[in-house]
Length: 201
Length: 282
Image (cartoon, rainbow over all chains, first blue to last red; front, side, top):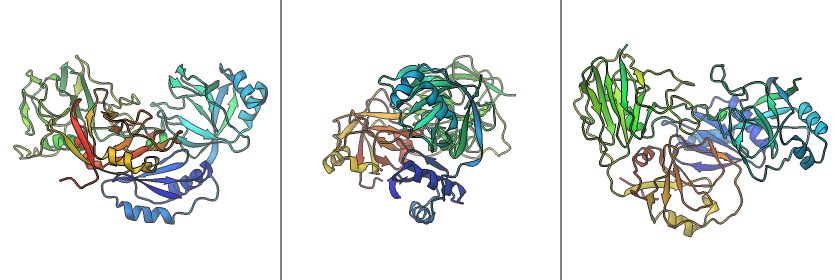
């Protein structure tokens, strides 16, 4: 773990792999650090203090926190009902060197964990642990991806919380809102959450 | 219930508070007032708790009326046409008009009791990047005013420095990706005079000047940032992030402006000059 500077209020922790990020994030979540926010990402975790935080002593505390034993999804997986009817399903299967049915099977069987969020409120980047996911992005991003689109890119799958531009491969759509301000909590897919996709007919 | 009715919204007037801290892990940015100090002061002048919402007015142009007598105060960029940095009574039916400030960009209008619109995820702030919170004000909007049990402060005027149109000198420290740039590029960042671009907004201040060369090609895996981050996209022209910055970004952050100095940067106007320095300012 490397600690990089990020101004007068925050420290950026850098790791060699997403796996390490997940383990450290689980440990940070369980710790009693007094900070404003902890923001995991692909290779980093940003720890944001407030006006009273002394960054030197925070760095000292962070160095003493041991990573968790495992990536630590909490509780029973959240089940997300989906239909595999995305515009890029066949092409994505080709890119991954399998049939569309095989892609769907793997996606349903995979034990996904929300690694981090970003891009838009409630947009979770879900990492698998069983299959090797490495999906090239679309060569030219769409200007409009419909809300609820189930998509793949790189090592991740995700569901677009709302209509937006996007370069991910669309393989289907979710039948539940992943971000709903009228629900508590609004974001269904918080970091650390275990997720299973369930095919809905 | 007391209300304010917007007669003219100006170029961009939004409701702001201290935003939604603590939810960045869900992809929810903090947002809130761009000039937090001015927002806090506006609330203090009318006896509000600092967490109550004010109106952030960009380059003046806001006009509004009240249906009952209220106490209001403005801070930040000084707009002609109203008292500034001092609480005053706005009588029912009278129109408050904020003119174009000669210097500075953002004016904060506090009303005693706060602008009491419905909070979204714990905050009344408009986030123009994510769309969370109330949309920017429009003519005809009717805003509820809350109440406060706190006493009216006995302050006549708050003697604080005001934004000027002069070149702004801002202290920076190396950011997490300083090593994506060589010493010459760092020297260029911390010596050249940049000009604030007209594309600047609540997300960030875009700067024009001599582009900085990068040592490395390729993309960074997106990583978290806070306000004050100076990011360098492939254009080599820095973007200094303000309140509505994205939660994570994929371009290298070469430097950070000290958190408290971000308030002053939030008052930079298009065309104004700014220079970054590693030497302590003040």
